[in-house]
Length: 219
Image (cartoon, rainbow, N blue to C red; front, side, top):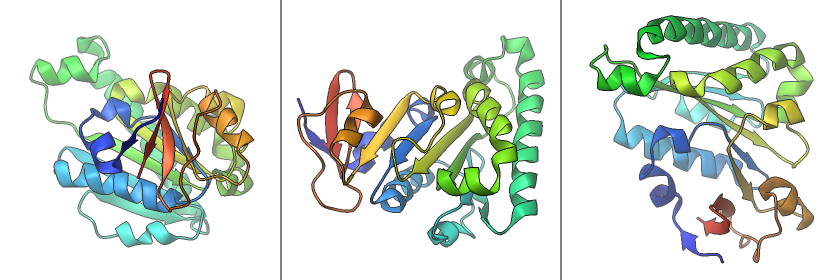
């Protein structure tokens, strides 16, 4: 069964846990991720949400530079900045692990019990093919960050152009995948895990997301 919903309604009504470990593939990736980020930014202050973007594609995410919530947008040719971003994320993960230790390692319990305000961090990596080509040495760090970051409030959104770009070990860390418009209908099965009843209409940002056992089409 498939129904339509708007991207803003699909994401803005949910918790950050619905955002973490999100992968999206094929046409309209910038449109989709931009809408998602805009939805989050509208509803959270910079004290509640920090965003970091690594753009290994057409550098269109440079448009987010200067946004109060966005710590930085790093590009494929900015090797030192990419390496420093991963270093910062590792250090922040370590800091949060120690900070939340008294609360069982849970950011939710830490917040409920009145711990000092701490923002969610959303990291966008746009163009995984470019990441593997240019920064393969960081693959192990990305695997560890996506595996452990969620419970400490560090969330990831990855984009790729095909179902096979993201390697298996990394893919296992993601609970949510979004399939945008693809050339080959068989790729929807590879992304979603089953053959959906319909494919997205030919519009940028239109795609399919799985909820329960249903594929939902959104714009």
